[in-house]
Length: 225
Ligand SMILES: N[C@@H](CCC(=O)N[C@@H](CS)C(=O)NCC(=O)O)C(=O)O
Image (cartoon, rainbow, N blue to C red; front, top):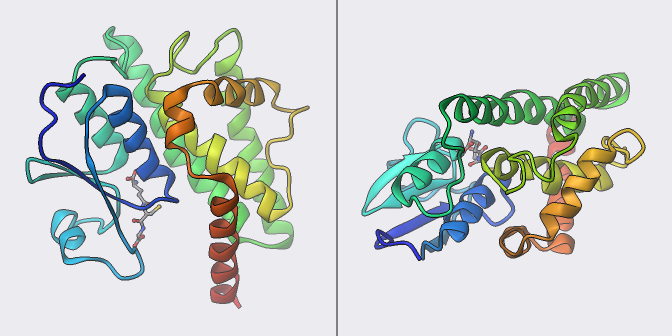
């Protein structure tokens, strides 16, 4: 159980993969926290004050001090509560984990968002581009239970975005972006993730989540016409 767990508050949003990452990390460490659900369409003064640069969730408030950006928050949590380490100890392995974490957000997420936002040929191109990136992740999983090796680690937590956002979104978009024949390792990894109690506890309930994604996509479509 964590020692320095007082006054931990998470400004988050239940359906956000970025917010869920932080919940996974806090839960893995056994850090008790207060969850404050935020309306991102009508941002609270506390959110705007805590993350004036990006004005986004998640924000972790530790003894009143705000930390923003989920990858930064994960590292802060790992530095502050050192039980059940999330990042590897070896400097090279730590750098590699950070590299793949950024790859998920800066490449996979950004490209996969275009699958949601585009139509016709542009959508097909976005699917292909997303698959090209996922093939690199697929290769990283060969011979490993998790992206972190035998144990769930930093990259796994970050890549839950692929497992529980992208792979759920594809059901709504109606395009199999991550077909099992093409990505057997990713599918095996998702099964392994689902065997981890903390993951099971910290991912959004599927039906509610699919409804949320569907409604969000309808709003996106309305905006683009
Ligand atoms: N890079 C950020 C992304 C966070 C993010 O995109 N949050 C979304 C919710 S999923 C948000 O707060 N959106 C509000 C907005 O864009 O105004 C992170 O890793 O924390």
